[in-house]
Image (cartoon, rainbow, N blue to C red; front, side):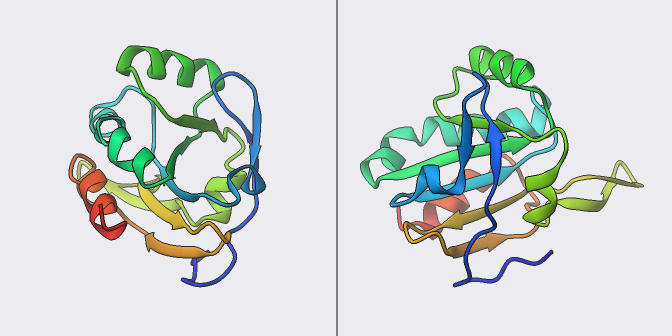
Length: 154
């Protein structure tokens, strides 16, 4: 599925690391960065998460919320949050419902081999619930948080 700038973001209902369920409405009135990543505690995913963690002061000052989504379990997210001292919400999507709705699942190339899995991607949802920006494929996980900050004007 392709996300369209200016259209309503797809709704979702997923648990965080503590089991609390979040929906799109949970973030209404806030600019929300939702980034999809393949797996907790892997090199690229850790660098990306730490980049968002380290930008917390700038994001909070601008009223921006960050949410990470992967197919990992809440228990895996809890461990990842603790080990990396993450300061934002991670949602568990083992059934890949949100991942599919946001077009973050498909063919990808890894180590020269084609496989299917989570496509590292990001969407910025405005306070009105509409898509404001979309990166359908993120090439460099470690540099991406800075790209997002630039798109937000931070």
